[in-house]
Image (cartoon, rainbow, N blue to C red; front, side, top):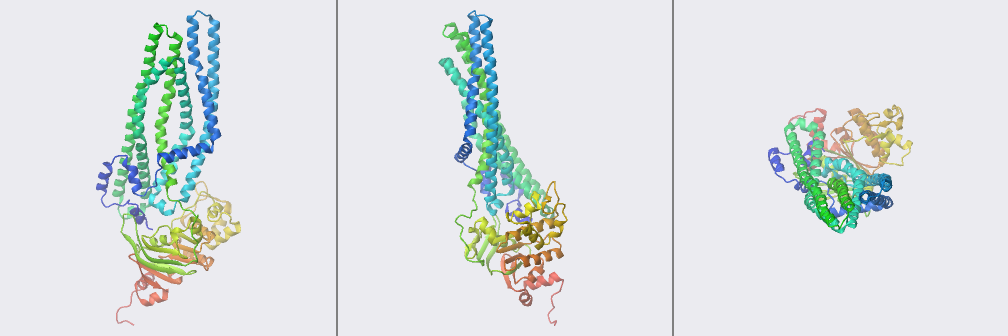
Length: 624
């Protein structure tokens, strides 16, 4: 597929950027998530799904979670001793007791503080270990789910959405598990025990103190009703920015060739404007929430001091009890402040976790229940296909590829060759008609079975971080070194691999040996040889190789895959010359089908392409 097709298929090439900009800037931030799903972005988990996932993660390491909770409870209980002992000191002094009593109580305060410090440090250590192990499980689940996504789901969603979820969202979830979660747990336990201690000290003062925090409750309710949607919209807008930047960078040559710079700049500005508005929306929520909370802290302390003064005058309470109650409330503001701060961060990370966990709701490719093809025959029957928000690309295509046949598909650019190859490989499903292998729809095959049946190789390739051996064993983990060298030899890559410093153990990618485009493509073809599929589809797979190397590689592959079905999407017509049959595509239709000699003799579209390829002029009328 060309870069322009990819951009247009994702809706990135628009004819009216100004209208698009107006429409985007009038949207509410809450609609961004819904809009992203309508455009094919990956789903977002519902709140109940997020809660279930969190419960599942806690159960997976329940001992560490229980230990963290127990240690935090002990630390909170020990911390209650301080204010009560200060009140005792005041009462002892008013009663006329000497320095010895005060010294004993002061020593008890120091011991309680030291014990609380040690217990809190131990609790944080256990909590952080729990967080790191849980984060590892989240990352592993994300990778597993990503690899299980069908290729068409990933392409429709766009690289930006998946990248944002796998980087920014997972990182924010990690921060929550490592830092926010343990801190929230610690402060929640402390706040709970401080409230219990306040009520135990004097029920009336405790009730007044609790009622004084009513302003925080209303501010929290107002904030929570709006925060999740706001942060989901912010995450969706971030994904849209990443998607537009990725599409522009990938199609940079197409953008430059078609002079689409201004459209791409306008689209980027639209996405950035939407992102700015969603961020300002969540900032507005915070600027309302936190000032209301800060004011609410003063009310309960003032209420307890006033009421405590009245009760003290009446002799219902001692001065030490009033001071202890005020200290409890003052100390309560610290964990409450931390809790509310963490709750704000928890809304952001909760939205990120919903996006990460949303992959569980995406379609998953699985081999379970996948039917087994009767043979390797491929039948294309009445196939039609149209990309989203685009016109029909294929119309009424009928084709049968026999097992072991070498078929070349040729035609002008935009004729539908690449689209046909994607349907044959099961990447996309036809809009109408069917594509079957051995009587089974290709899209019904599980990923492992499909990889053994049909493999699509395009001019897009990737070199993974790791050694040459690691890059090759992605296709066949159990392959021996001898099999690896056989595959490299088959595609003509053995010579340059032997020249590497450590041969198969040479590290590739950043920090290692860099490969050029042709070498990377040969590695991709070597993986195909190791995968050993029944049917191989080459969509300009040798486009980055020079003509001599490409021809040698194609012949070597043909020799290695003797008896296998090979379908080549060819721009170099020597590939068609060597094929058993040639299929000619024009305007999304199959117009000619036959051997090279027969099609040249028919003097049709293929004959014209062949003469153009060789620089020949068609014979004029009346010429022998």
